[in-house]
Length: 209
Ligand SMILES: [Zn+2]
Image (cartoon, rainbow, N blue to C red; front, side):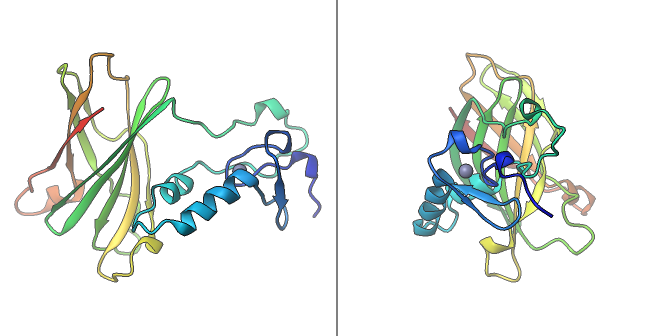
């Protein structure tokens, strides 16, 4: 199978050759641009246990690397970029699990809360279904509930502990908060815990942005 190199796109960020300084071609339709190589270098040099840059890179949506010929170039969606990101880096331990709130991302019509959930591994066949349920209230009294979309990804490379697994998730909320909103109280609950004998206290965080 041959690939039309004119359709080359960086597999990590989706940029095309005219948009980057250098593009390195990999096997098949895989490419990486100079900016993404630079980012990978920075991740390799990051000594933090949870590299924010590695998380950002891993949480990008997949890039369509081999677009069919008949597809109009303009119709291939570029990876979406938040209009504004707020780093939070809050963590709390509760009932043997840790919830780390990582980032708030604001888009045109919704916002997302990105988190890491460190807990005993889900058993096979159960993974990826459970998600954390969020209840958010801001200083104006506006409330958002639930997890509308978002996903949970296993990140086994982020821990060496066999009894702990790291899951990376995001929850999506709309509408956007108003211009007066700058403090959010985030309550988070493990949906599985509601089947236990005593419902646990939810995690509670306060985010100022
Ligand atoms: Zn790139």
